[in-house]
Amino acid sequence: MADERILARCAAGRDGEFVLSPAEGFWSDCPCVEVDPSVSAYEIFDDFVYSSVGDVTSKWMKDADTGTATLGSAATYGLGGIMVMDTTAAKNKYVGLKVMDADAKNGGFKITKSSGKKLWFAAKVKLTSLADEILYVGLIDGATTKCAADDTGAENLADGVYFRTLTATPTKLDYCVANTAGGETATSDVATLVASTWTTIGFKFDGANTIQAWLNGVALHDVHMADETDFPTAVALTPYLYIHSGNGTRAYMYVDWVKCVQMR
Image 1 (tube, one colour):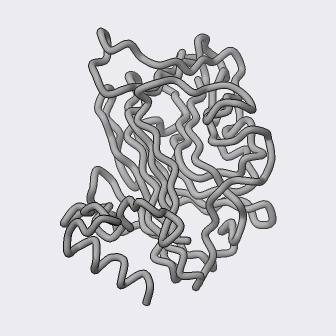
Image 2 (cartoon, helix red, strand yellow; image 1 turned 180 degrees about the vertical axis):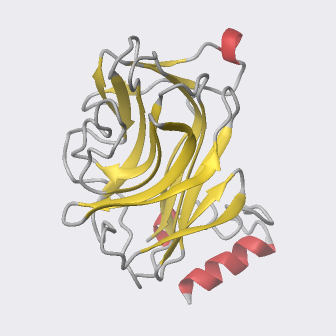
């Protein structure tokens, strides 16, 4: 009931506590930003207009094998903020960013069947090449330091809900879930990536059982269920951005923004 009241007030307009959500699309049913966020929801959002990458004292913790993550210059990439993730070398080098201060399972988001805790995750990303790059973007266990296995891109993590590519199919985006007990369940080829083209990927949890994939603001038919064998039920997860060089091509990923919202 509280959820419905919040959304109704948002739809009605500004009332001193809420601002309007979009009328339609991915964020249309997402709780609005509030003066007092303890009422309904909490979020992680980064538009990368400044850099906060490091360990312990920074927003984003970096795990890398030679890779770098730096703020792109406005002169080169335009205004608005871009995070440039670069493996700096070929052959199984990587760089990952996660909202953490340590390698531990203490992320701020959980997806639990029938909890009523709806969740929205999305990120806008671009790869300049699609040779053998391995991408992982989503909510992943914060103890993970290297998301992908060398050479193939197969999952190398304990728990998560995420999109990824494999070296064998670098243009094909897979929508996956994984947990420590069961392993991974992958829905293959939910979308085709295009080099040097911005793509917004995301998923929404309905608070009951369904986690639906979205692409560029359009709902896909591809879903995972919170009661699947390989679903990371009630595991603390964190936003994760990861690029891996695969078999031999230096890899770059550009991130315009990332946002995750969950009902309290």
